[in-house]
Image (cartoon, rainbow over all chains, first blue to last red; front, side, top):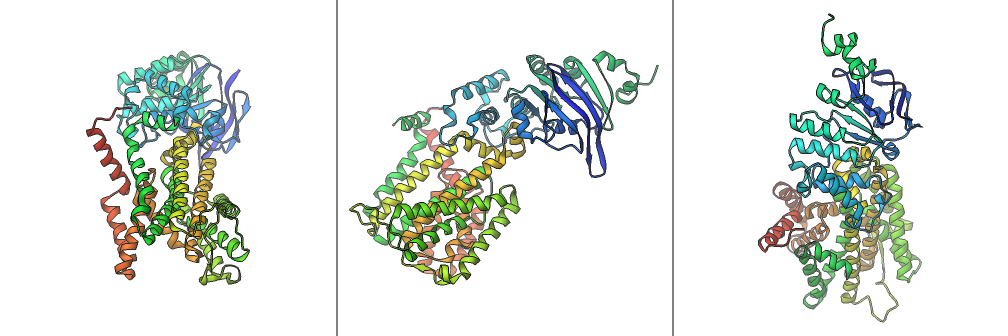
Length: 248
Length: 330
């Protein structure tokens, strides 16, 4: 089954067309990279998929369901997880509280008012497992604002995984990270089960070629190429306008 | 006992201040004159009012400038029922007063909960002023600026007389403890954590799968309910309903209390209510006409030198003391 299918999706900002009739589909378990120069519409595409902004026209199907008119929080419950290009965390509360918030977001007890959050044992255990796996358990009591950029970036990814998504959207997960931190993120994504489909944006060729099964190239809001990494590497049009090579 | 044990297990020393303050509040009637005890009851009632505002301001992150609307609604409902209709059953009158405050909050909330920041503040102010002018102008119903005097002290059907200030004080104290405990439970729950998440980063909450509107609306109504409880007690204590109870000055006072007391902390409402009420009492004794001037100056000073309110300084001081005495970590 397709994890994601979008058809003729367009989005205008004022008079500017950020995306023009983009269609693509991502198979279940696939790792899809979206590449393109700055302003190609990559982040807009992710926001349209998870519902942060509505499309001007076109449709979005997630796991077979038409979600075009569904609000962002609804789509999370269908299985969409997302990390942000710029860290968007809960800065003045602890690392552990950040993760607990992300974990309980998809639990039915998220509205419970009179039972202490610390009494939900599975929640605490999951939080511990997530933080331990990313080497952040020792920092659990530290307010996020006091962490390094790299650590905050890791939490950004942890939060996107907390809802156990079926479709994970990663917007430049390695932006601003050192080489070793980048390979840590690559390992994390490669280690995910194939029951999770991943759509990610990146500018880093190492990241793209070590994760992606298929690559979609956006150029001024339109899809100009799609294929396996080898096909994209060999595509003359992509070489010319994105990778910056000259023919021959 | 189980809960108490868990609290102790969590961090035994952190709860000592609460127990200490509780003990002092229990023993107060032994030391205070009837008038000062009356003042102490007033502080506890205003602290309950401030708890409600603290929930939405300190936890959800919504700054309301019209919170007296809910407090005042309850005050007037109690006045109507007792003065105009001779309603003597405290349970029924109190319940209707709180219900009216809740309904008012549910109504206001529909218009404003999707707003934030300055817009939220202004519309809460506007709606509460609307309510104020209705109370002010509709003399036949509300008595206008004469108010509705003659609310008797509640009769609980016990052999105790609530007219006695000591009993009334303990009655208020019990309700205060109940409200405090409820607020503690709320803020410790998944719901309470989600409120803090909304305060910190609402758009991320949506991306995580929360519907912030629902949390804001429910917390706003709960906040109104606290205002209602305080309003009922206040009406019975003062014995008269005035338009001032529903007006802007009452809203501003409770906002000052919360800001002074450090929003988002459990200790905030009591600290804020105690500070403002005692200072007001002391200053009014000597120079009543300068009270607003001194209040304004105090507010400016606190904003400049005690960012985040007095409460967090007390908490930090206590934590330092705690560390010196080597409390167990987690």
